[in-house]
Image (cartoon, rainbow, N blue to C red):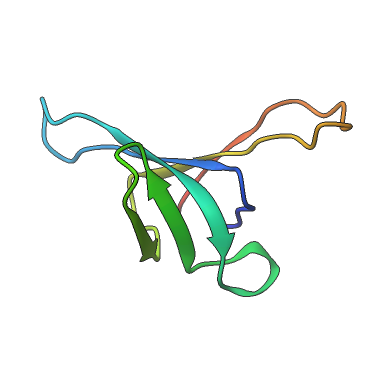
Length: 75
């Protein structure tokens, strides 16, 4: 899994009825876009994580890039 600052990570629930939560990558701490990542959640708190199953990255294209929005899932 690779991410860059500004990407959004979505964490899906393993149980029916539990809400999905999202966080924005504020810093990539690994090499070449690999984990760990520092994330900021909607409520403002931050944490460092190694994403696991159920985590999906929504990449944000560079402002000058004409490439489509992509989604990558963790293995």
